[in-house]
Image (cartoon, rainbow, N blue to C red; front, side, top):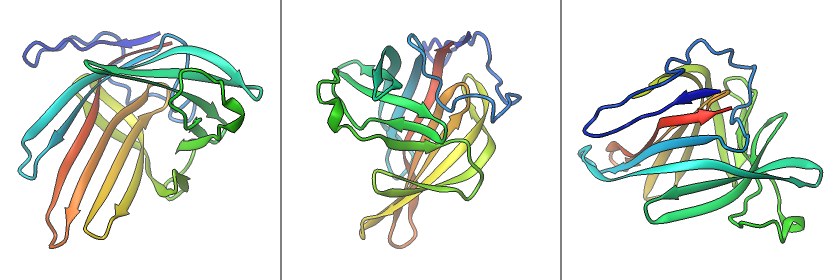
Length: 208
């Protein structure tokens, strides 16, 4: 079992287990390890155009059940924060990490569910895939991403969307064998003004 815990009082943390994951074999593991009991803890915060934190929230993602769907093993993940909880079903396939695009606690309507790829894995830089009608690109497959609990060798996934008024670029960082490590969204306004608007970072985990 790989375990890392973060205890925050001011900015004090204790990390147990594998803090520096930069030596993991990148192709040897699932991009998001799904086993009942696996837990990831994240700190998510939004920022204004000057880089000031507007809002922050600690939330937990946990694999709390598994089931079969059309002969495939699927897992129920639950996100929980202070005043929020949602559940959904995901799975790993040979070409990546998938969602059943459902927020239901049950599989009552499982025949109508359709898997949607979340991240392609394995892959190589330049590979693309479509997630919820948006094009994503694998930018890097061995980039080091540093958090408060250590450095992780990650796949980096990139997407740019343009509403006509503003353009957003997102970066997703996943470490095979550990899971999602970080997420960043940069907002680009006409005239060239760019800033980090949203960031989510792994601050603790326990995976089997």
